[in-house]
Image (cartoon, rainbow, N blue to C red; front, top):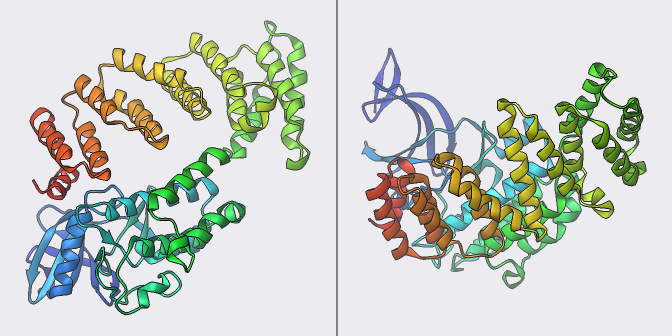
Length: 469
C-alpha cells in the first residue's frame, strides 16, 4: 500500500480508498474508486493466511446468487488478501430498523423469503456451506429495499468442526460446543432469531410457531431445511394477502369528491352508493359491514361508465377480496370490469390492465382455479415475439408451478425452444437445476446457452465457476 497525497490512500496500485465501510475481527471493508474507470467497489482486506484463503474460497463458491454481492476476484499485496466485490448502497438491517422502524408485514415476509432463498443457495452448493454468523449487521438492505447477505468470514463447510464463531443472541447454542460438527440447522436457528428480531407486531402471533421451531434448542425439533421455512412463509403470504395501503383508496375517494360532477348520461342514483362507500371507508375497522360493501360496489359498477370510476371499483374488489368471498367471487367481478375497461383503454393504460389481469389470474390459480392463468400464458407465448416481455409473465408462471411442488424442467425447455437467443432463461434454468443437484444437466444447459445466446456477465461467469466449467 502506498499513499498519494492528492488522491488519498491507494491500494493494489489502482484503487483509491474513499471511506471505511466496516471493521471487525476478520478484517476491514473499504469503499474504493478505481482510477481510470471511476467505478466504485467494496474491497475487504484480510490476513493472507489459511483462514483468509478459506474465506476467499467460500465467497467464490457462493457468489452468483442475486442476494449475494457480485465478486470480481482477489489480489495479494504486502501480506494482505484483498477481495474485490460489488459496492451496495444501503444500510444493514439494524441501522435500517433504527432509522425507518420495523418493516410492514409485506416487506417482512419478503425479507424472510429472500433470506431463505439465499441460505438455500449456500447450503445446496457443490460443497455445502454453513453461514454461521447470521445477524442484523450482516444483512444489507439495498436502497432498492432488496436484501443481501454479506461477510462470509465465519462460514465453514458442512461437517467441519465448529470454530466457536458466532454472535451472542443470534448464534445457535451448539456453535459453542467444542468438536460439534457444523450443520445447516445452526443457520436455521439464527434465521429464526432474525425473523424474531425484525418481526412487526401484527405478525408476532402468526410467526410464533415458525420462530419457535427454528429456535428450538433441540436440533431434532428444528426444521430440517430452510426450504421448509420458506414454504411456511409462502403459506402466510397467501393467507395474509397483506392489505394494500388504505391511503390509495382514500386518495381515490378524495379525487371522486373533488372531481365528480353529475353526468347527464349516467343515472343520478349513482351518487347514493358512492356516498355509502365514502361512509363505509370512514367506519372503524371492526364495524365495517362487508355485505354492504359488496352491494354498493355492485351498484357503482352497474351505473358507472367512466374509466376512472371502474378503476376504483376494480381496486376495491382486489383489496378486500378475502372479506367479500362469502358473497360471491370478487376476483371474477374484477375480471369483468377489466374486460369493460379494455374497450375504452388508452395506449398508456394497456400495460396496467394487463398486469392487473395477470395478477388476478395468479390469485385464482392459488385458489385452485389455474385454468385461466395457464391458458393466458400459453396464448401470450404464442403471440408475443419480444422475449423480455414474454419472460416477465412466464417467470411468474414458473415460480407459481415451483411453489406448488411441480417439476418445471419441461417448462424451461418450452421457453428456451421458443426464444433460443434469450440468455436470462438459460441462467435461471441452470440455477434451478443446481438447486435440485442436477449438476450435469446444468452444465449441458450452460453450454447450450453459451452457444445459442452467448450468455455473459458476472452472474453467468459465477455460475460457470460454480459448475466447474
